[in-house]
Length: 279
Image (cartoon, rainbow, N blue to C red):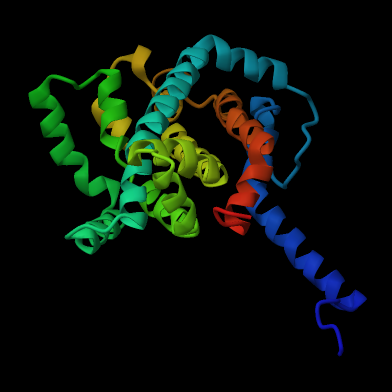
């Protein structure tokens, strides 16, 4: 039988060319950002495209970025908010997903339909109701305002539910025969099988919280509470002015932790989209 999975050299070359062009197209904004972060002001708007500057100005731009705005504070806020939100999301989503995937109860399909509806609602639609609610609760301009609105993730519930459905029911029945409660089954059996999915969701959740600008710009006004994305906007509007080199240096510092974190867990991320709950 003829094997169709092996590509001819021209086809393989064409495929790699397309992949390389796509990769370059996606990375070009980041490459350009890094290029601007090491250029002096007089080279930022010169005619033509040059990735490497005639005069290296990276030390000055990054020094200016660190002096002008409390980047470390903004990034610490981003890490704290991302971790707190992720813990709450997993704590809530995992039991909900297990119930929707493995338990039989009246209204289960209705609840799952509500989860799907939640996936379709844009964050901006909830901005005004959440603002009014947190204003009445007196929680505006606090860490709670940055964390609580995202503690329930319909996407996490949907993702984990689909993942849990791949776990054989025989494993759960055996655990019940051994005397495990439903709570123990969730945290001692289901969660270990879903580590890849949890890692993948953690990456997406962290990126979402790290880059979120809309809600923090409404919920907080104190500089000491600003997450990275809002911190960059503050840096540009109040301090940097037309110093785009320092602004790009700030953006590079903010993006760098996400890139490093992704490379550290990329293997788990790839596993999560190519494997099920049980290998």
